[in-house]
Figure 1: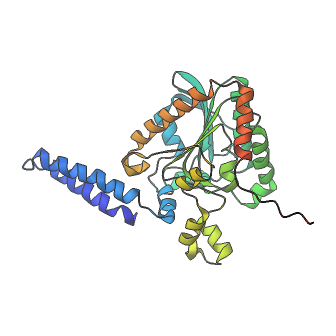
Figure 2 (figure 1 turned 180 degrees about the horizontal axis):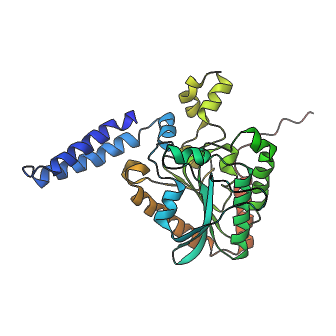
Length: 314
C-alpha cells in the first residue's frame, strides 16, 4: 500500500544495517524505536478508505491462518447435509485453552489460486447452512464457538439465489439467537453485509483495529448513490465502517489493537492477541447461566440503532 511505503523503507534500512558489522547496536536500536513511532503515525492516521484497503491487504492473515496459529488438533468438518460443501466457509473442532471449541469462519484464501477456489470468501447457501449445522453440533456437545468474519459479502450469483441464499442467511440470523452455548465473534478483515452478519450473531463481538464492518461495500454504495465507483473513498467515510465507528455506535463490544500497526506485519503477534481476548471473553461468558446469555444476546442486537417515532396526529 502506498501509505505503508515509509514504514517498509525504514524497515529495509534497518535490515541492511543489521548485516553491516561496522554499525553499532545503539544506532540500530534508535532506528527500531523510530520505526515503532512511524508505525503509530502511519497506521493510526488512516482514512476510512485506507482502512478498507488495509482490511483487504493481500498479506493480511486469513481465517485458516489464525486457526493454525491459535488452535491445536483442528479437524475441519465439511458439508451442509443438503447440497454440498462450500470452500468459502471453513469450520471444525479445534482445541484452545485445553478445551474443545468449534471454530468457523469465512476463508478468502492466501494466493490467487486459493482465492478463486474459495470464491474470495463469498459464501453460497450451503456455506451458511454448514455453519448452522456446526453451531447445533457445538450446542449438542456443550462446546463454545469462535466465529471469524472476513468476507466482502454473500455470493450474489444466480446459482446461489436459486438455492435460497436469502433464506439461508435469514435462518442463521433466527437460529443463532437460540444456540445454547457461548459464542465469541471476531471480525478480522472485511465484514460485508448479510454475508458477514449471518456468522456475526454472538455474545461478544470483537473487531480487529483495521477491520471494517458495513451494510454494503464502499464501491457498491458509490455505484448506487453517485453512479460512480470512483466515489468509493467518500462512500467509505459516510458508511462509518471503521472499528472506532462500530464501537461508538454499539455494533461491537471491543477493539483488538493490531500489533506493529497492522495484522500482516506480525501475524503471530496478532494471533496471540486474538487468542488472549477470546480466552478472556469465554471465561467471562461461561460464568453466566445459558438462559441469561441468550437473553443478553437478544438484547444486544435489539439495542442497536436509534429510532424516532413519527408524531401522532392530534
